[in-house]
Length: 420
Image 1 (tube, rainbow, N blue to C red):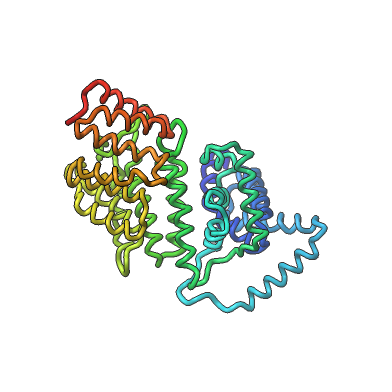
Image 2: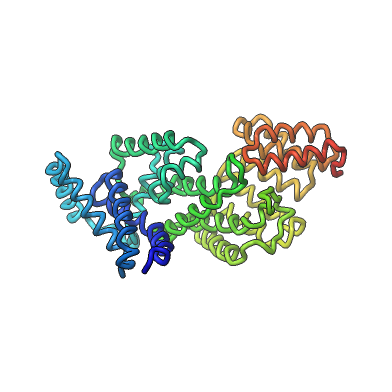
């Protein structure tokens, strides 16, 4: 097998195996830095050996054996090897004598522990996302830095800080117990949704979407769904991601320009992804009270099921936003609800709700708010006010496609062609 043949197979294998390998090594050695280093070394060894010898029948086992040997070699060279080995032996004895996990919670692999460790509430929110991308997503530090639009050196310091916090605070590499899981799982889901949101609608830069981040978030959510199949909000989050990501190809034009939902070619939406997402919505909303991700997924499903914006079930969407507001009393949710009310009851009703949110500090600096106001003012035939709102939004928008879209809208208003 030559390198050209082995290359794609090796790359796909690394992507699939890295998180599993890293998690197993962390569990064994209790050291995230060591686990990362020997994981990288094992993969480098594979890049040298596999193109010559061929990919082994069990590549994951080959990588694990190689990484463990390298870890032991490193520890043997360490002056504190004897002390570390003694600690590992004690921990192994404790693990062997520990009672079995709760019935029905048979965990497929160690990655679940890394999910909860990377998203531990003791870590700052931005550090949780960065560490998850680095450890579970397999992104290199410069790639994580690009996702956050910061220099690699800054991101490297952030990741080091997160690892140091895990070590100093003695954050355990373990899955929370049944009594802790309800309180900890939302943090894990929020990390994954933050990654997806940045991929779906980049906060800054030349592109509207970061498809690599969105697809990585979907991949990680699929892993979490396999690991926690009975958690309905995990199904809800994955369903939400799929139902939104299904529109990815229709959201931008040939030059990367923004295409609004009302103008998208729905024939370009991924129907297989939509059907999978709809199935997950049913799972998320069955068997108990709804969770926020399940409700948001249901809203996304209504958008995806409609033939066009006019035939969308806006009354049902408003009703779902009413439910969501009881679960997440957020001004962002209220903003989205106001936009839905405008579609159901007309622009004046929506504008009244938006104006009632004017004092919300969390909407300052959030360009969708003045953008929504500008659109409704334009539809109401109030061009001067619409132009002012578009200018405000233009100063806040982070990506070039969004700014270009707002400039076009502003020009339309200024040219006196506002719709009435």
